[in-house]
Amino acid sequence: MNTSNLLQLDEFLQQCRQRVNQRLAVALDAEIASATLLEAMRYACLGGGKRIRPVLAYGSALAVGGELAAADNAAAAIELIHSYSLVHDDLPAMDDDDLRRGKPTVHKAFDEATAILVGDALQSLAFQILSADPVAQENVLEARNRLAMVQLLSQSAGATGMVGGQSLDFEAVGLELNIQQLEQMHSLKTGALIRCAVLLGGLSCESTSDSQMAALAAYADNIGLAFQVQDDILDVTSDTSQLGKPQGSDSDKNKPTYVSVLGLDEATALANSLSDKAIAALQEFPASANPLRELAAFVVSRLH
Amino acid sequence: MNTSNLLQLDEFLQQCRQRVNQRLAVALDAEIASATLLEAMRYACLGGGKRIRPVLAYGSALAVGGELAAADNAAAAIELIHSYSLVHDDLPAMDDDDLRRGKPTVHKAFDEATAILVGDALQSLAFQILSADPVAQENVLEARNRLAMVQLLSQSAGATGMVGGQSLDFEAVGLELNIQQLEQMHSLKTGALIRCAVLLGGLSCESTSDSQMAALAAYADNIGLAFQVQDDILDVTSDTSQLGKPQGSDSDKNKPTYVSVLGLDEATALANSLSDKAIAALQEFPASANPLRELAAFVVSRLH
Image (tube, rainbow over all chains, first blue to last red; front, side, top):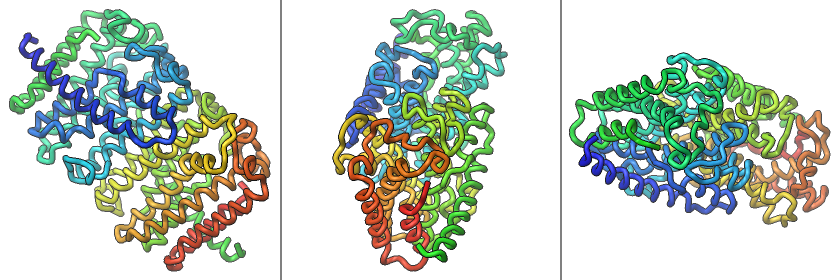
């Protein structure tokens, strides 16, 4: 990526993060009887994070000619699902991690019961935002589109998506997976939510055509896998302060990774090739898809 | 309740259970990559249970002149939320229970990580069912109604409902609550989902009026509280084999209950008075609301 593209992307990323953080702050400023629960939910969601999934939803809304505001609810909902999954993933019975985004994980800062409830409540909140009463909103999508968003998010988050992938990941501990098995696991565990983010952006504009949705899906599948391969690469090449979690924490657990299966060089080549394919999938889109194109390059060049 | 009413109610209960079990079996027969996850989800949902919430949804659909089939998805969705909450509630970091419905709890029969993921996946599945593609369904409700169902279920399940109540419950361990604080906690922890079940039944019929919804809400609030008071009574008066969980398991944990706050006699009087109020709230409804009326009497006469 050249410097000018990087500067433009940086501005876009900042704008997206600001929008989604604002929407999340409103959602997490609700009347909630349990003060501890609300505090822990805010701790889990408002303390930073790259907001990659919201950025993809916004980028995709722009690509199909929509406005950023139309994707605010979708962006917040997908980030809530991602945040809940991190809180549950970090639990002692799961990955047992103490650090997340450079801070103590929710069960460390609060306790395990609170962390379980926080995750559960964040998942509900995602669906609450997607189905929110249109009267209170500036940008009203048709009920049919919003229902399609609920359907897509629930499929992508649950047993047929992210949670299914997490379960496969557990089943794989100590096993030697081949590249196809590894791809299946990651296409669910990480890919399903990335794909969902991109498609939610497409659904946030009522004029999006089926062929546009298909192109966005192809983009999303490639960028999703690229994202995971790069994560595995960073797990062995970055240090703890850059990652915000202990370096090597995945490889330590004897989980198969792209680097352990392919080696570092081949994994890097794969990440770059997937990024190129993602960009190629957008060829029919005008310049409004440039943020998505730049994101595809960014995903494989990021350092954390 | 006289014998003839009990027989009619029993037939209605069986019909409802059959319908919702059938809908749940279809939903849990999906293509899911992780065999362990699917098995554990089925274990958590298909192994019995009173199906009180589905029965309320069906009863309410009948009361407003709808058909049972129109409430199938709502009934299954509310039971999935209830089932997920039981799986997470039983976890060692939460109530740490080994038995549920007379069987080992999910984290005992499988493991903790699986139990966490099962709960997460069941919650997603609830929203997936409510928003399912209408093409595949016999009874198509308008998108607007189904979106309202998603909104209601997410509000009732999350931090503003059930999960908020569970968090308050944890904050209350070892404290002496007064009757108002106890009511607030239970109106969220148990009441929100019972209210939701009744209102989902109302929403499953497109002609339901606002005043009908208000009457159903009043019915639901009273029956929800009655249900909880009766649970507390049964916790000290029933034995383990009837309850399917260790007798006295709530009072042992030093959690305040209606019996510990009011004493057994006053708690029984309260349960009966709430049941009467629930029935009174239905006075404008025709005979189609009889199952709801009989349920209100049943809730405070049940032995487990």
